[in-house]
Image (tube, rainbow, N blue to C red; front, side, top):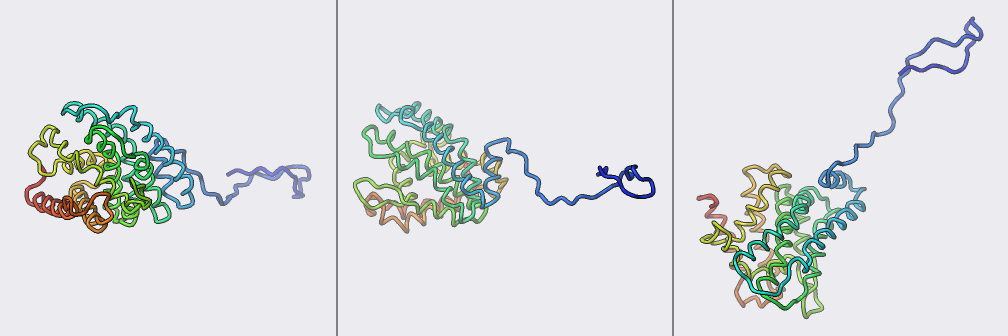
Length: 289
């Protein structure tokens, strides 16, 4: 840069300024990055440094509040009859309500550090706390847990893609209130338990009528574009997804004794593990339908 001195020097021409000089001034400060232009860019910025973990927490609190508002019972009543058309609309509405948080959960699962891992489970924990026992149609009551199931899978897919399993396991093991008990339940168990009754409803989805694991296939399809856009997993997505399901099944089997339902009522922990392994085996040879 050009530097022009403001003083005069005694160089034989008293009273005349010296010639312009070219000086190099070292840069000692780090330039600030531009303000993030999108919510996901903001999240990536906050995840990039552990020193921003308080701002990261505050950011996810606000995002969770938006999802809480979008999934309120005012929009999803649990009273009334259930039919195919209305129930499929309900599933789509729930997917729309969390579509902005799904990529956030993918990124949190993929990139969060141990110091940031609590934030991964925050949305699912806060959503679960609101879902107390309610009268109404069983399928409508249990469908309230569907957004949590999507968010749980999204966090797992991100963690699996980045081999960041500690963050996902912390989410699965997070305590959540349990009905009629002072002891908390395990979050992963509660989500799976609370969506067991309307499992068959996913066979109402066109093209899923004869699928043995219709719910898994549907969640697979819902989350795939988000995973492609945000994690760039490509053809690895199927393997990553199956690995998440296997991990959930094994964790369910491990903690099944703490389930809110009797373990021997349906042997669900063992059935889940068997179904997932069967699903993985079939898809490895036949591909997904």
